Amino acid sequence: MTSPVIALVGTLDTKGDEYAYLRDRIREAGASALLIDAGVLGRPGVTPDITRQAVAEAAGRGIADLAAAGDRAVALGVMGRGTGAILADLVASGSCSGVLAVGGSGGTSVAVRAFSRLPFGFPKMIVSTQVASAGGALAGGSDVLLMSSVADIAGLNRLTRRVLSNAAAAIVGAVRAPPVPGGDRRLTFATMLGLTTTGVTAAGARLQEAGYEVVTFHATGEGGRAMEKLIGPMGVSAMLDLTTVEIADEVVGGTKPAGGDRLRTAGRLGVPQVVSTGGTDMVRFGPRDSVPERFGDRVFHVHNDLVTLMRTSPEECLEIGRVIGARLASAKGPAVLMIPLRGSSAIAVDGGPFHDPAADAALAEGLRESLTGSDAEIVRVDTHINDPAFSQAASATLLAISEGGDRAL
Image 1 (cartoon, rainbow, N blue to C red):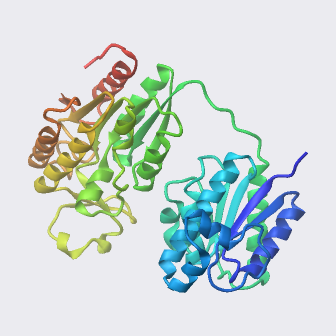
Image 2: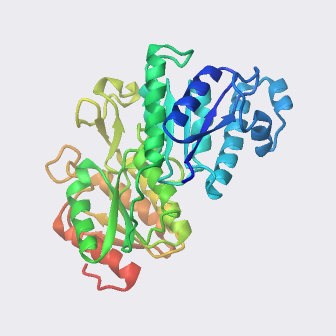
Image 3: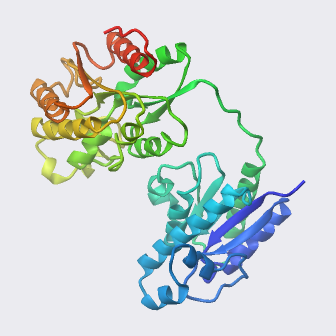
């Protein structure tokens, strides 16, 4: 039986001893190691299997010119792209079973860029000094396994040996894990937030009863980013995108936007989608004392010690509606926007701290402006987003546009 091959990606000029140690631990665990040098300047401290010249050329550059330019940021970007291209070819040909990188900010940035080319489910791991402070950003919406190095990766000692040994064992264990069976049900992606959980869960349950497999993404920025990346590769059949709070963060400047691809991928691919305004009554920040001073006179709700919510104003809601509408208007497949007239979250209902009819009306107007003349349909439901009637309407509508079921609105 052929042993699995683990690709080790690193700047071998500064981390030669550490990568030699990793290579040996991987071999002891019964796998093979393939060393890829993503360094640019000094001599490699261990002989690579794939040289830095080959990595740079895979990105269309020459290593000598890259080193002479003296621009670290450009060099890291080039080596990340080149490594990604090489890894993608190795994975496609079946020549690599998993990938592992260790490093500080530079090596980590190369690995993050490179690993973003690899498919969901393929074992990939990064050991970094940056995990504690930037874990979510490092994941980049992928299923990469992140491990804090605790101590700086600057030589072998009793701490780094333990961390590197654990990392080697973890990646070898991942590639030796038994295969996970797929499914034959139609796949639906859904978006949810704590304050839309009741409604989304109920709508998802009805879709599951109808034979769909529902995967829910937490709309925390990273959740939306991951979802957009996976719609195409996973062959999604329908979208239950009821929680678009990440658009509010994007427009207003909250802490959890999902990037410019949010609410675009399904439309571009023609995937049927039911979209709603869940969470657009709020923008997310960290602890209360972290909210920017310019928002000092706004209405806030402390969700917990780590999350402070700010009510979106009528002016902001108008723009949020325009952005959501514009992205939905370009959809190539069937799209329905459902507006819950009595609140887009559990705290925006009558009597709740974010109840604001003027802001809700502005949101609806922004949506109307952008969607007028498009093929997307607007449906107004006279209840709040967590009401069973709204869940029923959303699930029935998605079934109708995706497979011709009865619409029960």
